[in-house]
Image 1 (cartoon, rainbow, N blue to C red):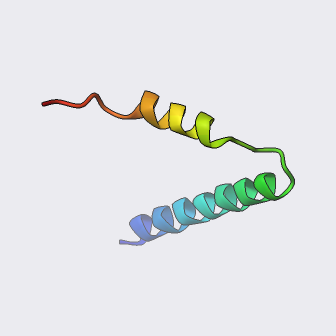
Image 2: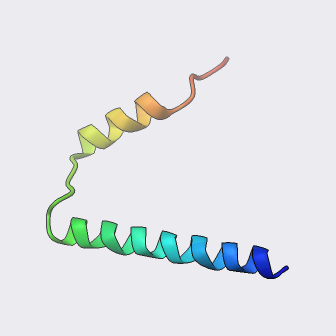
Length: 51
């Protein structure tokens, strides 16, 4: 159990560092996007529709 808890703690800490850096980049204007660019990415990454 101890090993799993250490792994979970380290993963959560890494995710928090990543999220904090992302928020900082957005706040400082280093990451930007337009609605069109975001829609293009969603369309490109979405699985194909089946009918």
